[in-house]
Length: 244
Image 1 (tube, helix red, strand yellow):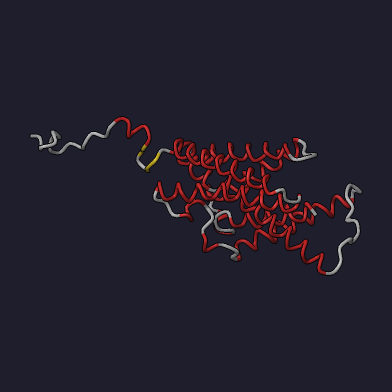
Image 2: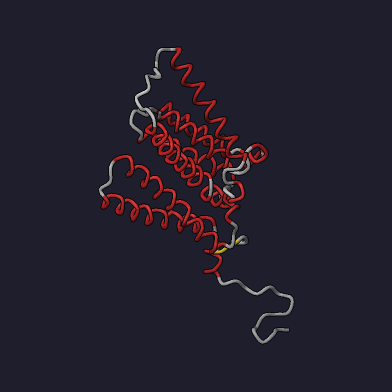
């Protein structure tokens, strides 16, 4: 017996085939969601680059605004996609309640210890020299604040861009580890564009990226660091003191 809509009693209503192409059991399909996210990211990044180039700022402030632009291009589309997909911001690994919490500082300490240990070894091998102090007084404070903020943005950008929304969404479509391997390989490959970067450095970056992502599979970093907050702190200190 059919109701007024032509659907037999007891039968589930037929879903239009076109809807199934775009929407799955858990909402917008991962591939489409990631494609929309990448499109918005590319558009916002292009606008940011154009604005910065039109301002004709000095090198340091161009670096700062450039990194802020990349961070905005990575996070704003994720906020939009969160509204579309009806997901909380914290689902992408960077909950606001964890901002600058003890979990962030755990990562910062590990990053500081890691890069300090590396530099001491390089110094002992006569491959690196600490040099001498060239700044004095307020100049030390100003530059410390500038580079601290810049590399905080670097840590936030890299962690969220490749281990936030991207990891969450691709994992829905292809599984956690395939997504982790793909994004870590991209993370390593991106480092090849750095001046003086060799394949060994790119490989190391990819491996550490895979380590940062391992928390969601083993719950290890979530227990120790909580989401990607630890990776943000660790990356900030590593970049900050490595650049110095």
